[in-house]
Image 1 (cartoon, rainbow, N blue to C red):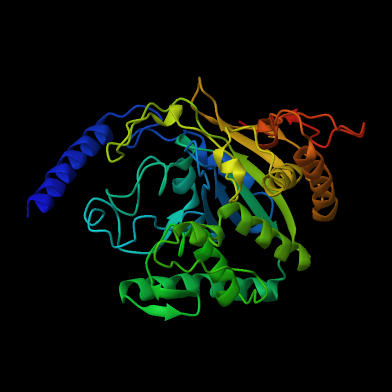
Image 2 (cartoon, rainbow, N blue to C red; image 1 turned 180 degrees about the horizontal axis):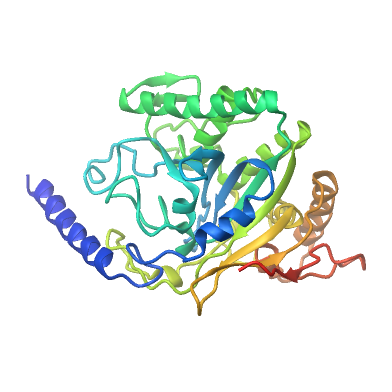
Length: 389
């Protein structure tokens, strides 16, 4: 009873803080103003006829920064917006999370503008700022946009994904066990049923991607390290899905939604009080020794390959102007086609990973900075300031 009373009193305090922020919050805080030109920039980005977008969030910790992955389906939300399906980190049935966090669904449906740039949530007051909404105030996000899905396949793809996410929520609410996509109870688990596995499972079983490799990390007593080695990670799943789309002949490009570096917000529910602006903003790494490296010092081949591949597919870099608090398309470049992008990524990742010197500073790969090819070829970025603001 004492523990329950402690959580109730803590939640009352959180609600009071949230109410205060909502009444007069600064930019980059929950309840504060979103970018005033959000709709305008969103319309510019939607001029390309993409069908869905895979959203890969950066990590915010010094070690084990796997990040997060979600998928946005075009025009599935109200108001000419996409709908993001994202696994709920707090749908794990931990008594400490009940009441203090939104736990009513395993797979959340969130409008994309809200997911990336929103400062209020349509889910509930218990939704988490920087995770369930307002991601860019806490970390950068890379969006892999997919286009060229044949009209006859598009409806089936959308129906398959949305239907399977609904089925996962039914399984979660009904406390189902031992489904085709997971052994054990259906609830969020950081290693066994995480964001990457839920997204991958929806494509595999809902959308018919039967040869997509979705691993199962069975947890045995005392073997959590073994389970981690088999866990699905966002970057790994993203590369697998990109390969699936390439096999189907779909086109892809990447939008980098850059972290707003000025948010002084501190989540009162976190044990360690760190302002968003002071959190690491790490490219989400696969399971490797890079988990223990500082950001910008990766040398694992898989991480380097993903960095180069996403960079080569890059089209836009979007940021919040620190002075005006308006969104702007910071850079525009012509994306490479998948095959040459993958070949160049393999070449460069292998060279970097085999370099026995100091780990290279590869932050430019996820900053869309201008870069000169080592082989003397043309600059693949073709970076130039965009006129849209």
